[in-house]
Length: 463
Image 1 (tube, helix red, strand yellow):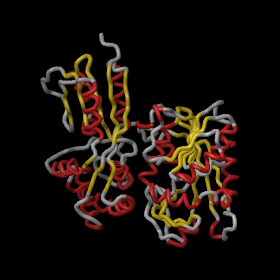
Image 2: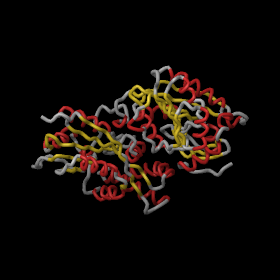
Image 3: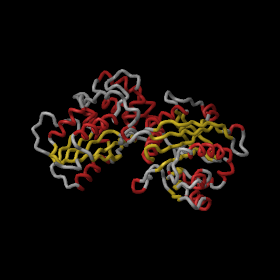
C-alpha cells in the first residue's frame, strides 16, 4: 500500500488514477449500479440535447455513456490521461479532456444543463471543496442540476479516533482506495446539503446506499450517497444563500487595529482585484479615476470622475446605500463603476464565520458580503446602470515568515485584530482560531485565499 499523502495535488492524483485504470469498473461494479439509479432520476429533469459535464469522468462508464446514449452532449474531464484514453475508446460519441477541475473554465462562458461529480472530490480540503461547489453552480444554467457522489467512512473514523466537527465535517481522514492511501475530507449529508444551498442549489434528492467493492473485506464496505441540487438563483457569486434579512455590522478601522490592517494588506498577494480593475480601466481608456478603500466620497468636493473603483469600501459603511449614492454623486454620466467585495467562498471570511458564530463580538459573525453587492446592484440599476458584469478574482493572504505552531500564532493574532476593533475581544477571538487555522494550513501551510467578486457597472444608454 502506498504511503499516506497529504491532500494530493494534480500530479499525485494523476499518478493514482493512472494506476487504477480499467480495474475501477470491475472493483466498483456495485457502485456503478447505484450511480445508474441516480442518473436515471436526474435525466428526467433534463431537456433534450442537454449539455452534461462529467467531472472525474474516469473510464467514461457509466456517467458519460449513460447521457450520451440518451442523446445528450457530454463533456468529460479527468486528471488522468490513462482514464481519458480509455473513456475516448469506450464512449466515442462524447468529448473527453485531461484537465484539472480546480482551474478549468468552460469555453466561451458555456453553461451546462447538468454537472455530475461522482466520487471525485475526496482529496479536497474543506475550503477548496466549498469553492468547487460554487464553481459547479456557476457552470450550470439557472434550473440546471449539480450532483455529487461521496461516502461516509465510519470504519476509518473509528479506527483513527476521529469525529465530525460541529459543522458535520472531518478533514485529514486517511482513506483507503484500491491499494492507495490519501488524506480526505468527509461530510455528513446535512453538511453537503448546506454547501449546496450556500451556492444557490435547492436539494432535490439524497440517495444513500451501502456498496461493497468486488472481493472486498467487510471493512471495505462503502456507505455512499449522492446529493442532487437544482440551481434556483441568478448569480451564485452573490451568495452564500439564502441572503440574510439584514446587513452585517460594518468593519471598523481604528487606532487600535490600523497596524493589523496594514499588515493584512501587505501580506495579501496575487491581487486579482487590482489587476482586474486595471484591465477594465485600460480597456475603456479611463483617465480620471477615483479609488476608494475604507473611506468614502462623502463630504468631499470632488470633480466628476469617469471611473470609480471601490475596494471593499461597502464593508466599512454603516449605510452602504448612502455610500453608493455618494459614489454616484461624483460619477460622470458615462462613468464605469467597479465594486469589489469578498466572494462567497472567501476563505478568510468563512474561516472567521465558522470559528466565531457564537462569540459575542463586533462585527458579529456571520459576516455576509454578497448582500452588499446585491444591494449595490439594485441601487445602481435604479440609477440607470443597466450593464453589470460579475467577475471572480483571487488573492492570497500569506504567512511565509514562520511555520508550525508559530505560524498559527502569528496568523491568529493578526486575524483577531483585523476582525475586531475592540481590544477586549482579541483574546476571545484568538482562542477560537487555533484549531481552524490548523485545519486551514493542513492543505496549504501558511496560506489563506482571499477571493473576491468584482462588479463592473455601466450605463448602456447615455442621455
